Length: 411
Image (tube, rainbow, N blue to C red):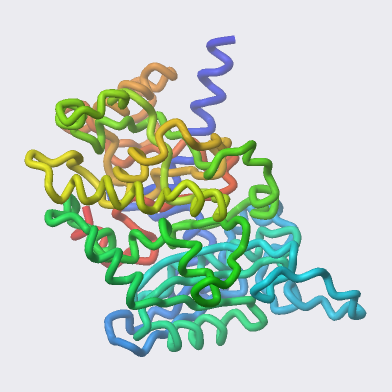
């Protein structure tokens, strides 16, 4: 049984290693199916798109962003406006909630002030493509006031009939900016923007105005994801009284982010540094319970402690550490296929390599699959073992597929 399991895992790893870089020479597998810039079919985005000018934004979304090899997993293999408007006879209007949304709408939220819309457009397109009931989808994009109108025009020009709402609020933006750490422990500029914290303020952003209604629940997604599964299945799940549902990720622990000794010295002794994290890049949230429990205020409290603490409470990340501290033990666990993390990572740390060896992947196996052994027990790249059954691929590594031209400098 152990031998059979080993070779099964080896086969999966052999398949999924092609999802990541092999020493920077190879491409992600879904890019091997004409999803590259300049490909003649299924172009992800025009290679001539200006991504640094503002406020002008341009984006071109293909007929399909889903790889040929996995299109069979979707009810729709390509995006078409007809997915959202099937031409059927008009039906009796469904009940509406205050705010004007259909009662059965699926609210999907993103936040970005990035001028490069390629990841956002691909994330939206893949969500629509994979959905069994795409007409239920309502997309919310939280951004700056300066970008909101041009971002809407650019997205809807390529994704017509999309239910899209743009949200901006200068007061909330300043509130987020005020709690940003004085020192950012990352060289990824996108993590240091206040909009990296917008996921914590969804009720405020989604409300039509002060005191107006907002959806009872929503799904938040980072922009560096591709949906392969039906998001409606996730949206309709029973939260069983929990405020959020997220994926438990044991390849990383609290110690990766939190200075546990410092935390304990300040009286917060309930936290265990060896606890698995739960990734903030995708979660389902009960928005009313979130407001009732004042989770945003609790997260702000942790961020203010970080601003004042010397030495710091956490040494990595911006939004992930306060999320972990505020919601530890208070989330419902999603199956791992809803957040297949690690795509685009160029290194496997020594601690992670040890976990792989426990599964039967010794150095010989990894080398045979094309992984490069580096000093200190590290491997390049990070072998992704979850993509074969993934419902969402999360490109949370530095080597983003839409930034292929800068992969060498992003390492």
